[in-house]
Image 1 (tube, rainbow, N blue to C red):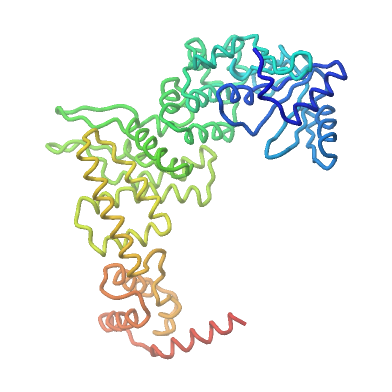
Image 2: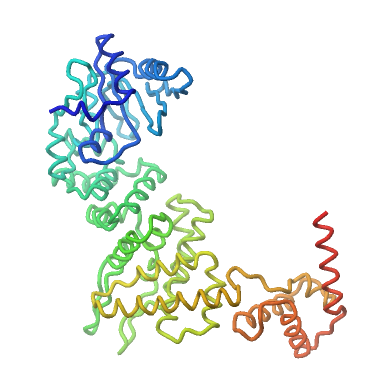
Length: 489
């Protein structure tokens, strides 16, 4: 079988010219070939040569354009350059062996078949010859083409050896099954189950890379169900694993919160590619196992699960070595607020409740609404449509209130510094009380979000609490104006 017409670009042609002239063999191998057969685009090309990959990369780049920058990784015997938005990596054909306590292989020179044998899966071991005598011919010693057409994930060698040597391949198997909608071969899946504890030699960062790719798949639930079935989930993500199962008491059962969360994630995946919003969907009910209670005559409750879940996020991110920056805070915010729009839907949508939601969600309000709409997982079509309709009412109200009151990310028009100057008192609890009272008055719609109304409110608050002004509104305005002029200088 030949694919010569599919590899007609200048890089492949120069590789062909060079290796044919030097009586070498070279092949384009791995993911590029897999995606070519599947009709998927690929911006990463691996070329293996029975010789020096570094020398071949240098010679090809020089022929195309001497100005092309080639990156060399001599300890791995590889070299790489970018040409027209595609990365080409060159390596000498090799065979590998492993020590039990490391996934880093001991490498020796080998043949292309040795190189194919060391690959993780048969669908990634496909190679196309670049020698002129058989240019574009498919080299497939492990029936990877057949596996590709049948949608099977299988290993070239004994899967127990493959996964024990490099346990990350277990996650890669599940990731490919998720991305491609393939089935993992039964023998390979059994080998995953028996090698789960080998993941201890894999860094959290490498595990996260695979989890991210699963989460970003078109239907991420496929991957998480496989992670759960294999036992990997309880090993790498015990908090999520703890959500599995249904408990029944007095004839009343709660839903399986694990499968519900996966449904929410799938729903969201149809709406956005935002990785961290997808993480929020996966974790939005993470606090339910710790807040589950059975109340007589009422049934199962998970009161406060959103707040418990939000408190759990930093610990989960720290243990898994996920970023402890704004991305973590974003997920935490989504988890803590995900019940708020639902309450608005079920109750009367008041301006006050909308202002508070806008204030707390800030610029993430649209993401929060998208998450909440994905959280509708009822099998009752009429109920789903009713909730979606109500959410549209909430969205409209959010827009109206924001345009009228401008409370998204707002700061009260009177600052703590102004309050201290007005009453000639230092930092103290009363300053915070006054600021909070002004903010609440604005959010509750008692006053407008401007300086004059806030000052008038503060005068009333001062009278109620026996506080005396030492500076007038005009004095404060003048002081702030002078300070601003100095800052501008």
